[in-house]
Amino acid sequence: MYTTVVYLDKVFLGNLLVNGVILWAAGRLSQVRVKHYRVLIGAGLGSLYSLVFFLPGAEQFFSFLAKVMVSLAMVAAAFAPLPPRKFALCLSFFYLVSFAAGGMVIGLSYLAGHAGGFGQSGSIAAVAHRHLWPGLLLALVVLWAGSAVLPRYFRGRNRKEAVKLPITIYLEGKRVTVRGLVDTGNSLCDPVSGDPVVVVEHGAVRDVLPGPMKDPAVCAGDAVGVIERMMDTPWSVRLRLIPFRSLGSHRGIMLGIKPDRIEFSSDGRARKVDKVVIGIHGRRLDPGRDYNAIINPSLLDRAIPA
Image (cartoon, rainbow, N blue to C red; front, top):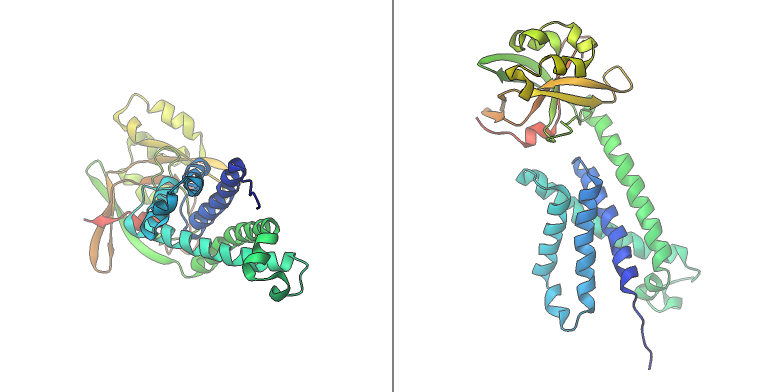
């Protein structure tokens, strides 16, 4: 009679690692902003669920419905709140990456083994069991590399086919329409609220900006200083500081302002977004002047009927 010893801490940590990589990969492929502590929470839920297997009479907790509910909870803990379509995309990539990881573990376990074929090892399950950890580690490396490279590849292709979209910005009873470029290269978000940022040339929105911000020098100067000078004005609650790593310089801080809303037309229907920030950029965004704003694609997913 054989006795199998199971170390629950190793089971938990192993599942935590695997779940974390799968959630991270799903977020990257879905082009959702990934926060590591949120991914850790989602992975922790899945790891706790794996320990239920060792409880007496736990079979009822491993039904199809139970597994779906746990996966929903994991994705929600890692990425919510999201628009329904974006959440469904994250969930789809979660399942896709999970199935791909399972297949890679079996395939890479076989490659990592010394057996000449499945027949010599008894079965596919025997090969995977014997060389589980080498195969699992190789699969995680492949997932990490693929999830890091693929989004950049698709961003490069999508940038060539980017969509131009006129948007109207409403701010304190005024409005202005700018020519926006929907570009997956713009993933800027307000670091406090997480709202997407639309980068706009200063000259395009100058007429709707508050007095102190009409001077083009505010874009070339100290953004923190501008906010400090406007702290005692009603505009202070709208002002934002947006860190960035492109737009003509390696790293910097952009001055942002929160509008009442922005509106645009999509498929012949008027749409609006209330939770958005306008980043004020001092230089020309397009030498050809085809557009004067760069739109974060996640803004389109947040739009509701106007």
